[in-house]
Image 1 (spheres, rainbow, N blue to C red):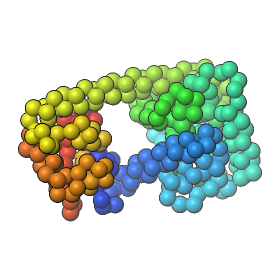
Image 2 (image 1 turned 45 degrees about the vertical axis):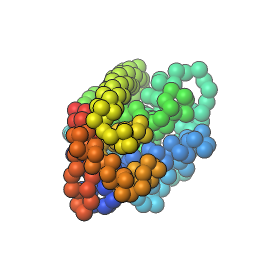
Image 3 (image 1 turned 30 degrees about the vertical axis):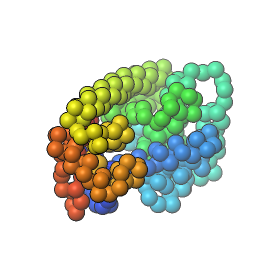
Length: 289
C-alpha cells in the first residue's frame, strides 16, 4: 500500500481502503492490543498470540489443525521447512516457547530474540498471519525485557530488504543447526533498525521545534499553543475532531485554528472523501522518505 493511503486511513472517518491498507491497520491494531495486554499482565502466552492473530485476520482463528502446511520462500516457491502438525503438539511447542521466553537464563535478550523469532516461525501455529504475529512478538518481547518503552522497533523493513538471506539462514538452522549466522542476522536487523528509528525520531523532534518557532512568529497568540503543535505532529493528517477530542478547543474554534495553520503554510487542507483533512506537509515529506 502507499504511504498516503496509510496516512489518510489513520485519520479518515471512512473505513474505505484497499486490502493492503486494511491489513496494515489491523497489524497496528494488534500491535497496540498486545502492548496494552502486556502492560496489564507482563506475560507472552499462547492465548495472547491467538488474540493477536485474531485481530490481524479479523476472525476467530485458532491453533492450526489442518495437515499439509509448508513454509515456502515466497520468491522461489522452494520449501524451507515443514512445520509440526496437530493442535496438541503445536500447543506443547508453544508452551515450551513460553517457558523459554520467561526463563531468566542469563542469555542476552537480543540473542533470545533471534531464537524466539526462529522458534515461532518454525512452529508456525496458525494457518495464516504467522509472520505478522511473529513480528509483533519481537517488539513485545523487547518491551517485556525493558529494552523498549514502546513497541516501535519494526524489523520488517530490514527483513524485506534482505529476504533471500532471511530464508537461507532460517533453512540453515532447520537443516544444519547453524544458529550463529541466524543470530548475527537478527542482531544486524536490530542495530540497523534502531539506528534508522533513532535518526527518524531526532528528525521529527527537530522539525517540531522548527515549526513551533515558525508558528510563534506567524500565528496570533490566541491560536498558538504547544499542545496544538504537538497534536499536528502525532500523524501527518489531522482534523477538527482530533482537536476537539484532545480538549484543545470546541469544534468552531478548532476549525479556526486549523485554518490559521493553513494560512501560514504549516498545514494544507485536502478533501478526502466527504471530509476535509489537514496535512502537515513537512512531516508528511519526512515520513515519506
